[in-house]
Image (cartoon, rainbow over all chains, first blue to last red; front, side, top):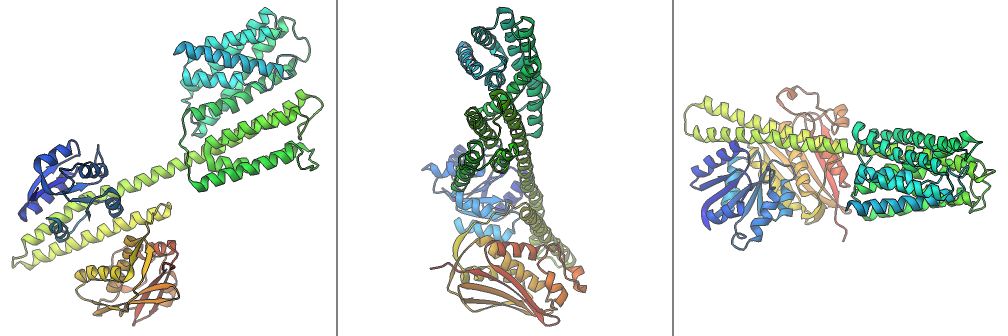
Length: 119
Length: 513
């Protein structure tokens, strides 16, 4: 697990690019995914120190992705932060087993604060 | 598979036909208790039109065995086959019929088809019997009995089979189960009282049968089509039984006339309950669609907002070290307006949820003091012109929706700041009394007039003050706050003195030990 590596999974390209810029400015290595297809494989390849995950995506849903990653012994220690515009993001975080959440739209400082908690 | 179904249909049709014919048919052949029409229509719709030979064979055999001459049997057989075939064809190819009968259009289609296809079968049947000399008098009553018997069968038996074939999802919550049991008991009691003279009540007037309507309407409204058709089928079965036993308000001089009145009554029952159930189901669907739309819209609006806000903040960072104050000011104003817009979107969708009754509250136990402290800390970061002072401690826990309570407190604090631009402090009071915890937010600003104070928690209300122009908002924050507090069994209130300031409070019940 590489502490300074972050995997971001969000179907919105503009948000993904934005977050990549912010995180790279703060010396993180960022990999972008735009949906959950084959995410477990990518996680194992990349072994990030943190996963930022959007809840509402086409295809496999964020909630199920959390389950998949937490179920695999190789990847279950990687902290997962839910990243969502949904009102119920806090509840979803708890019920899905993710570690924390960030509400969209976010404050850059808030984003970095939460990320630094886990990396 | 095809042959299995064919044989099964044959036997079912044959035995139910024999059963019907044996029950005091009018003129020997027009029975009012005729299951085959409904069964055959439902089976053709569910399993395919190509099963019709089973119907023809079974009809031919059953009628022949009951003493119809060969040509008449043939005529009846043709009529009995055409009936479900025509019905199924009309429903599927012309009327876009859905087996779940979820829409009013479906119920009306079934009703019209029931009437029309039965006319076909009754006409074929009675004509064949008359032409072959089997019957010579009471032609019209025979036709009517035949027609009504088939119609009822379709309305009650076919609908029952069709709806259950769609495997409707049943909710097994305790409340619903109890409600179902209760209303069934009520229905049963009314049936016993009116249709079985069980309690010895002097009920001879046929109109008393309409007492069955209230529980039936309840079942249709609360349990949808599955409830409606099951109740109708059960009722028809039981009332036919008691009429045969000479009990109930429909008992007339002969079994046939008794059954005729009963069947007409049952037609009204069946159609009414199905219509009600369909309307209710359609409405629920619309509500669900509305709700989904609201959620999706909220999500979609916040997505580009996220990007705009992010880049605005990056710009802010980028120009932090510049001497150009204009750039910094402009960007700063953009940033705060984005926050405003985000809050408006969230408020708007919260209100929509409250309106459609979909605001869900997730209760958890949490410590009051630490929640207040957290919210105050977060708000203090953004409110640089006011010092927020917390006075008092509760050392208590409450059971409530943590996120929503912090939303209320945040709303109070931001209002306090907004309406006291010249003051430099805001006080937050914590207290407990008699099993209630009270949180009050006091500002030292312009205050609210007595008349405005009365309406301050209403939707879209904004105080009439000259400061209003610079304060953006839909006037929803306090409305949402009051809904949140009231929904959790709490109280919300406001006090104010113009020119001196206002105090907004909310109280919540403590967890009982």
